[in-house]
Length: 173
Image (cartoon, rainbow, N blue to C red; front, side, top):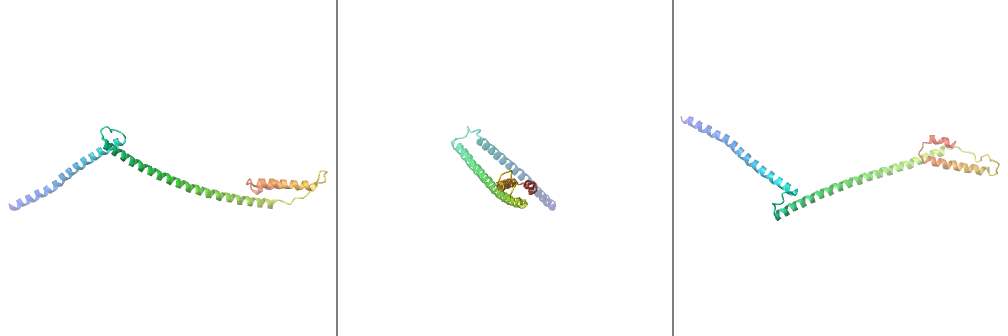
C-alpha cells in the first residue's frame, strides 16, 4: 500500500510539474501580449501627434516634447540628405575628372592623327613644274607658283577634315 501511495504522489507531482509550465507560459504570453498592445497604442498615438493630429489633449510640456522630437528627427533627416548630396557631388566630380581625362586623350590622339595625315599628304604630293604656260604674259613662273601655293592651302584645308589620304590624293593630281 505504501508503494502505491508513493507512486501516486510521484505521478501527481510530475503532472503538476508538467501542467505548471503551461499555465505559467500562458500567463507570461498573456502579459507579454498586453504589454505589446500597450506599446503599439503608444506608438500609434505618437505617430498621430507627429502628424499634427489629436494635439488638443496635450499640455504645454507634452507639446514641447513633441516639438523637440520632431526637430531632432528633422536634424537627422537633413544630415542624411547632406551626406547623400555630398556623396553624389563627389561621384559627379570623379566622373567629370574621368571625362576630362578621356577628352584630353582624344584631343591628343586627334592632333597625332592630324600630324600623320599631314605627313602622308606631303609625301603623296608629286613635284609639280614651277612654270605654267603663260597666256601671253611675261609673268608665267609667278602665276604657276601662286597656283601651287593655292593648291597647298586647299590640301591643308582638306587634311583638317580628317579624310583618309586615299580620298585626298586625286585633288593633288
